[in-house]
Amino acid sequence: MQEGVNYQELSRRYGFAPKPESASRLTQLVSRQDSDLDEIAKVINKDPVLRKRLLRVANPDAENEIEYAVETVEDALMRNGMGCVLVLAMGTPLALALTKTFQTMLSLKLEMIDPGEAECLQGDHLLGTIHFSGKVEGEVYLRMNIASARAIAAGILGMSPEELTDTNEIKDAAGELLNIMTGNFKSNLCDAGLDCRLQPPEVKLSNNFHTPSVAGGGVERMALRTGKIHLFVDVTANPWND
Image (cartoon, rainbow, N blue to C red; front, side, top):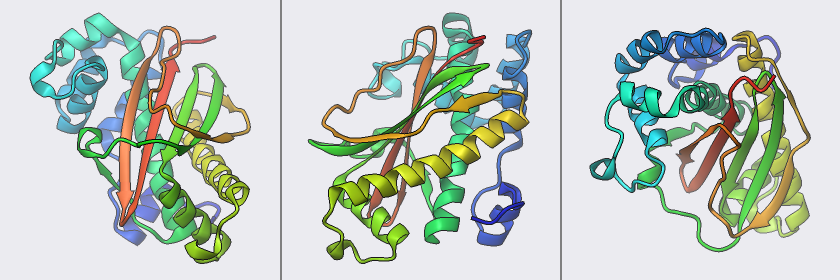
C-alpha cells in the first residue's frame, strides 16, 4: 500500500466517492464529550445518507422503515444518546478504509448497498474480528461467504480461486485484509481525536450472523459488494470508555 496517499487523493485517482463533509463534521463532534445533541442533529438531518443510517441503527429489530418505532433524528438521539451516533461516526471511516484497501490491494472498486437488500449469510461463513480500546471501546466484524473469502485471498496471494483450497491460507489472507483495513480506520479516528489501540485480528468460521452490541453502545451493519464478492462490516462501540 502506498504511503502518504490519503483517501481524498485516492478518490480522485480511482473515481470512488470522496469522504462526505458531513461525516467528517460528525466525527469531530463525537470526539468531544461536551458535544451538543442539537448540533449533531443538524448535521445528520442535512445528510439523507447519515439520517437513514441513524434511524436504521436506532431501530435494530425493524425489517424495514414501515416498522420503525423511532422515526426522527431528534427522537433517536434522545432515546439512544451518543452510542448510536458514535457507530455512525466510526462506520464512515471504516467503510472508506475498506474501499481504499480493496482498491490498493486488489484493484477492485467496492460499492455500499443497503444491508436490507443484501442476502443474509447462510450456514458457515468467514468471520474476522478486531477489538479496539482507548477513548472508545468496541469491535469490528468482517463477514463474507466462503466463495467471497476465497476470491479475495486468491487476489492477495496472486493465485486463482480454484488453486486455493487451504482454509488456513484463506483465513490468513482475511486477517491481513482486516489488519490493513482497521489500520486505515484507526488512522482516520486518531486524526479526529478518537485515539484507540487495536488487538490482532481473529479469523474463524461461524454460522452465527448476529452481532451483539457492547455495553452502552450501538451496532451498525454495512454491506458492500464488488462483482460477486459480498461483504458485511459491523461496528459496535461504547462511547467515552476512558
